[in-house]
Length: 80
Image (cartoon, rainbow, N blue to C red; front, side, top):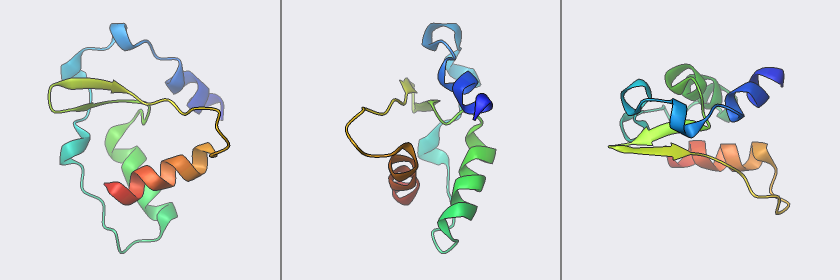
């Protein structure tokens, strides 16, 4: 949990675009269970909160709207 908080606080402006993983190129086997997909995604992107899509930096945040981070992350994995 501490590692997640550390990754979440990484500053958008301090990160170079070239150092981020382009998630449009990340491929995860959808036949695997969600836990395995989660693990592979984290292995591939490093920081799941700060990624890129093409030439755009993206900081992922979750609203406090009742959807758990786990559910939101699972939905993200299902779309990759």
